[in-house]
Amino acid sequence: MLCLLMHLDGETFALDTSRVVEVLPLVGLIETRAASGAVAGLLNYHGQLVPVVDLAMLMRRRPSVARHSTRIAVLRVAEPTGSTLLGLIIERASQLLSADKDEFAETGIVSDAPYLGGIKLGPQGTVQLIEPGAILASSRDPVAASPDAA
Image (cartoon, rainbow, N blue to C red):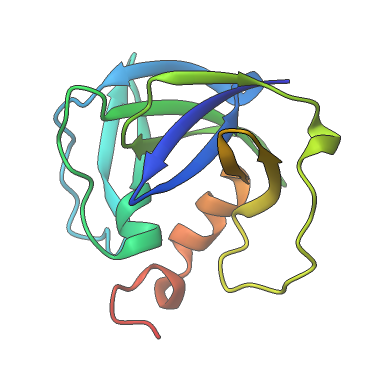
């Protein structure tokens, strides 16, 4: 599989590009008062409102840094009722990695971050797979999405 790499506070994460619909520059979002935690707002994507989650807010409890390489990845995620779109703000998204899915070993650790998948060890260091469907589920959970949750 081909993976889009992103870097966050010294760690490297990967998204399977088969789920990526489009990678956009960091554009303005529609604010929503109902959104809390890691939900940054809504993206008007060709007339469809797409929820956008800030990965840095979800994982580090801080907003993403607006850099030239900070992007919004529009992803297709599976849900019980079909598939839907999700926007994900990712920092330092400028590289690709080709790897087999089985190269990402499961850690066996039960985590409060179900969107973190397997880890690949390599010469460039460790790369952890991100599972976008679990991001959508956790961003809808008010306890998991709250920056005050412990």
